[in-house]
Image 1: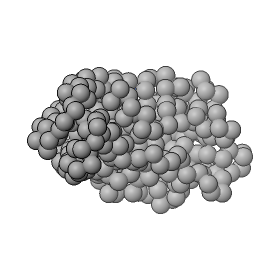
Image 2 (image 1 turned 180 degrees about the vertical axis):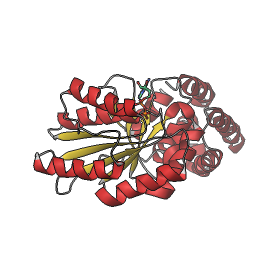
Image 3 (image 1 turned 180 degrees about the horizontal axis):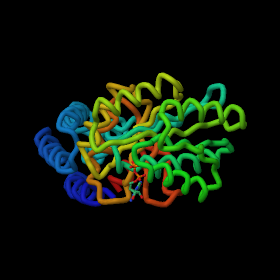
Length: 296
Ligand code: GDP
């Protein structure tokens, strides 16, 4: 993951690292290269422009130029700004501090990894001693209901017995009631996806949101789709006001653009990353760890 991005930045940094004396021109040249590398990694154009400008402002400061290791200082500035870009070191965990049952609504396009992420999240929460209920609410693709029920069985986690002939809003309402009656504290709603955003889907998601008032609305984004994932995230955020993002398929050969720009474009934090098809392949997102992986 991010191998190309990582290798290319390493090349830029190699030149910088050894520099004993540095001028503004050296810095500009290095930042031009950083800019190209980020654009090639499919990072949003505006995000790259603002990022490079912030690094430049700090790097041309006289203290950096006159320090004993100006190259190292510039690298540190790039590192810190990348971490800041992705949300900094702040705690971006789930906010589930409410009277149970609390609802987590998972939304996103078809194929992004929503159903898989519901299973992973349920497993994660079970590990934190919560009692989750998985709720299949995608009635348009009957296979999706079965898929979640199968995941539930594998994980030993209860799955609500939805049927494809039910109204999704009604399913979610009944599932919350069921959780209340059965002492389950966290309800994970697997909503319908589409190949693209459409009004019908959005209306349904808004109706579910208004009915169950979820504590978290997590947009599931496929990192492999790069800037497209960022655009779709913005669309969902405008209509639904998401609370965070689960970025899937970071184990693949995603160029990194989505991971680097989704926070800056949507203003919403990446809370989890998916690193494989298996149910334990979910990690809490830490911007600093990802940057360290990228910068080596
Ligand atoms: P949904 O349509 O959004 O519910 O998507 P699914 O959960 O059915 O996932 C679509 C495909 O992506 C499946 O083949 C999953 O195994 C795969 N998938 C989901 N998350 C990840 C991930 O983090 N890494 C990889 N490599 N594959 C994933």
